[in-house]
Length: 213
Image (cartoon, rainbow, N blue to C red; front, top):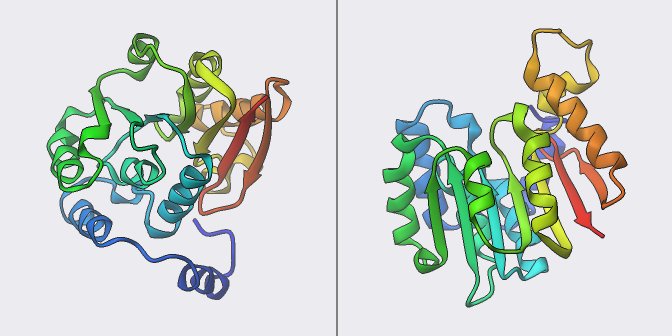
């Protein structure tokens, strides 16, 4: 869902950095072969993730929700030369596609993949993070935040995707809609937790930037 008029949205994309060739190939293959290709970050948001990562210059990045690896490759563009990106996804069927494009990239030696439940895996990673990107099952967003907040370096950034949830966050809540319910709780948590300062950006489906104090 776009929250800007289409002509403005098109203008924004036209006047932003273009998508690298490797990511164009990954995007094309995702749309051809994978279910729910709309889960892909996409060219414009990918460039936003890349820019934020480059501004942070992170040593360690954690990504919760790899999907086909597009956002991981965008975030990896900002890694320090000796930096590492840890990425977790529960769908083992996507691992082969992820590996294919990670190995094609210049960051192949800097990406560590995990397949499984992020709630179980995160506590086993003995690192402090400069940048975290949360883009997985929405019902667990509050749980992910509680797992990572004490693993963040001071000044570290937590990025949270899909926080506007196609506008459902401002509509009457369906009691059976657990994802929207948990996103509402999560958005309130980020806005009120004194350990972070947060701004919610209406980029595509909503992207929150939270800075750890």
